[in-house]
Every structure is written in structure tokens, then in C-alpha cells.
Image (tube, rainbow over the protein chains, first blue to last red):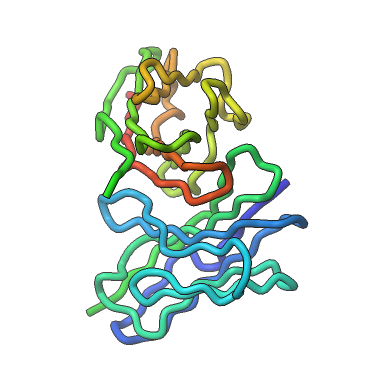
Length: 114
Length: 113
């Protein structure tokens, strides 16, 4: 069965620190990969996605993620976080052949201290 | 920017009661989904819906759950007889095509007491 694993459950950083959130998935076929963010009290919003092509994808608000097929990973990065990045971050995968099922990781709560 | 809207934002219900959670997907989208997130746990897939029928459902989506698209704009999730463990945040989502970006609503927090 497909699964998504996020390594960090709760991350606390100071402003301007660099961020890397790990995400690994288990699926042998073609995948579409996503990072969603959920700010406090708001809905899930798409940060970035990877379908094909350049494995380094850039998203909104300075986030980027790198797809490493050999490692089944899709880690999220940001060189310098801001207080406004405080949110919950979810990695998700959509495997080919699925008729409509995003598999989510357990989420990582990021707290940025001003 | 078009968005998925869900109502109500918060619903409290007594155990055993029926609840209907409502969603208005983005108008030109064809695929509709329900997910839920129990407090402190991951977002879990419940069901996907396409062409007026369920295309996939999880083991969570048992006989107590049903979905409907009654009028071409709304997409509802019904829980017939709620249990305490149904307490969760329920998210509706829609996408133009399968396997592409899904747009999520703000969620309905269901509390079963």
C-alpha cells in the first residue's frame, strides 16, 4: 500500500533560519507529489507540486522541494523562514492508477519564533 | 480566485444523530473528494466522486457514510448515525482532473458528544 512519511512532527525555528522538512513515500510507479500548507484556522493550500521534468520545483512564498526518485523523497526547503511561515505542512502523493486518492503524511507543525 | 466552500464551519451533534456536511466545489471541476483529519492525526482519504458515482472509497467509508451531488453544485457527505470517533475535521476538495492539484475547502469541524 502507498504511504507517506514525514520525519519531523514538530519543528521550532528562529526567523531567518533555514528549513528542511523530510518526506518519503512508498510507491513504485509514477507519482505526483505535493506539499500543502495549513495556516492556523485556514484551509489546506498548495505550496508546490511535482508531476514531471525538473526535479527541483519552486513554489509560493520562497519554498522549494526536490524530488529524488532513488530515495523516494520529496523534501521541502526554504532558505530563510519568517514568522508568517508558522503553520502545518503536509506532504502528499498521488500515485498513477489511483482514481482519486491523495495520500497524506502525518504533517509537520512548524513554529517560527520572531 | 475560485474556491471550495464548506458549511457549516463547526457542527456539534449528539451521538446517533445524522449529520450532513455540505460543500460547493469549484464550478468547472469534475472530481470531488472528502477527507478527514482526527485531531492530532494525519489527513485521511474518505471517498472520491466522479461522473455522479463513487470512484474510490477507503475502509473508513462504511455503510454509515454516503455522498451525493444533489443539484450539480453541492456535494454532500452524510453520516447516518454519528459515533464519538467520527469527531474530526472534514475537508472537501475538488480537482479539474484526477491526479492533479486538488483544491481544499476550509473544513467542517464535527464534534460528536
